[in-house]
Image (tube, rainbow, N blue to C red; front, top):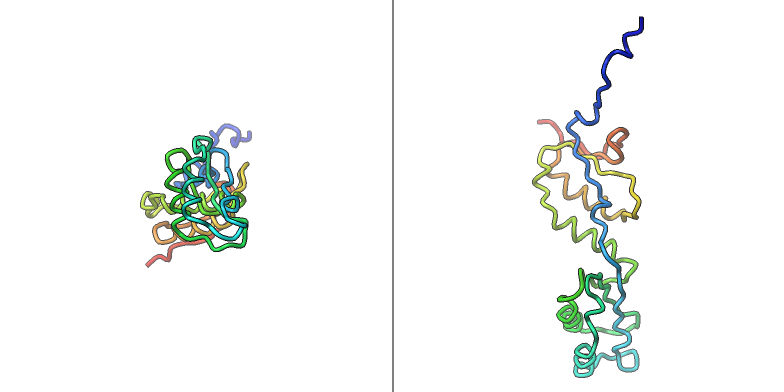
Amino acid sequence: MDTTLEQPLINRVAGSGLVTIDLEELYPAGEIVPFDLKGYLFMEMILKEKDFREALKAHDWSIYTGKNLAVFCSADAIIPMWAYMLVASFAAPFAGDIALTTPEQFVETAFLKKIAAMDISVYEGKRIVVKGCSDKPVPPSAYLEMTRRLQPVARSIMFGEPCSTVPVYKKAVV
């Protein structure tokens, strides 16, 4: 008689003590909207402070409510630092997030900001699996930065799924 069928199934992954981090959960919520400073430049070259301030005051900032604002300049012009600060001061009460980046790079910037803000101490001494599969695109820089942040505290770091992982880092036993 075969006794293997009589023994209960044991989920060894659940009992392994692995902690899974799903980077997809850090994907920015909301629409990413471009804010190009090119349209505010005189002859697409010069930013005139008075004109710029007036244009920003007249702009309907409420259209960015709950949206992510990607601020950039598509013209080859020198933009003074205070110009970005002014845009942020007007947009901040409305926008969900603001970054100095193109809309295409906004996702990467958002990931890196969220990873930088994470409390990594909760992973002290843990065996971590950084999930590999996702429905939304996770930039490679997010995996790199997560590993960099976790390495000082984690017992081990793996990539993939708990049932099939690739070892990335293991703390040396002293």
